[in-house]
Image 1: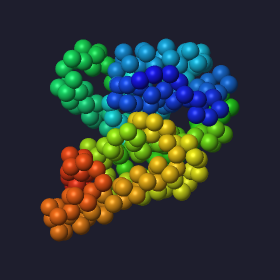
Image 2: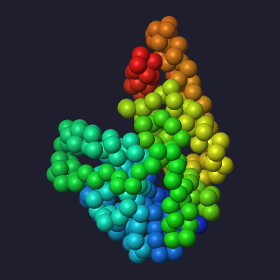
Image 3: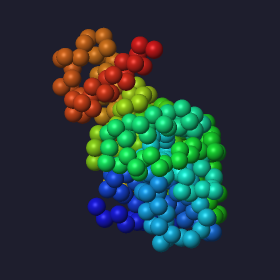
Image 4: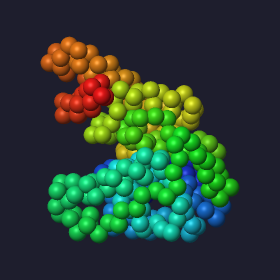
Length: 264
């Protein structure tokens, strides 16, 4: 994968990485910039810092789109700086950061040293529903539209460039990830984002940059997952599983999370 910056709007860039097929965003203002997500280790973050410095030498503000390791394990390399996230993002990193590290060491033992050297740094600036950041004279709006891929998904809207960074609320190149998701709420959260933000350039947390039609189609798939999961909770899964839009392993994880919501 060619890990070069792609300019998707005026001084708004996306860098897509081979590691986890993950996107990082960069918004450049006058004398300041915004970095959206910091990758999955200090080593990956160091590579990201070098790439940012090829675009701008300005100081930065950081935003974590949510509390999954691949989006914030690199935070320490961006200090001292304001790091923004949803209030539950900071809480979950404090609560589960070490657990995420242990899981990744187990899954990727060849990267043990890389994960062990990470200093876990949660956001130190938080909000609950909305915040606006002045990035060198450019306003970037942060929004939390509801439960979805996680409890704390943040959407970053750059109105003067017509770009939306959707985080993992939108996924390209692979099915949405349901590991600690809220499948019954996710469709409404995505619908709210699309209704309130009219932009045509949407940057997913992973994969290629997409348009509104792609995001709408994924919303429709998520709505079908929610509908079928509710039916399966009553009728049983056996005759319904073939109707889900995703592979069986993804479907079963989505159903497990949906049933947890229905049983709570």
